[in-house]
Image 1 (tube, rainbow, N blue to C red):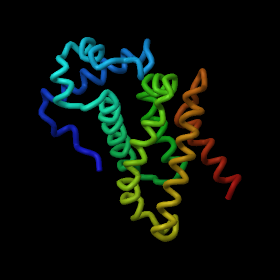
Image 2: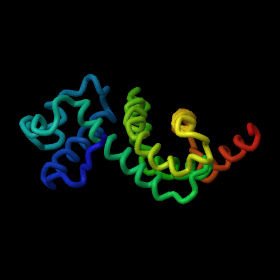
Image 3: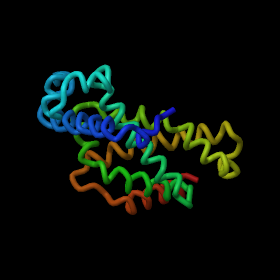
Length: 185
């Protein structure tokens, strides 16, 4: 399961954040696979030794960042009082609107799937939270499938939303979900 990065040594956490920031800045101008560790450490103004103290390869930087973001999303979701799909979609798009530039950059660099992998790692936590609501979905197995189904649908909506010149508001997307549920039920 995901680590709690907030309990890390503040200096280590700061170094990791500097490496994340440097990598994302470099990705604005360069393909991910062409970026070197030396470029990342130079941009972060850190040594290669510092990089290797925290990470093995540059992909680890993104994984670290996505773990943090996914954990923040799950925390936001857990605070939601209404666990119906339209309300969940509002939480999801409100959260991701805060990270839209990063998501668009990842989409441009064909790396957006890494966010989905990180979110999928969070599904057991989300599932545990939703177990209390399982009367709504049926048995435990049905709840697992319902979560996987909704995660896939939300993911495809997220991609479509990122491709819009003027993204719809979280409220508008919540209404779209509510309308779709009414039509299809």
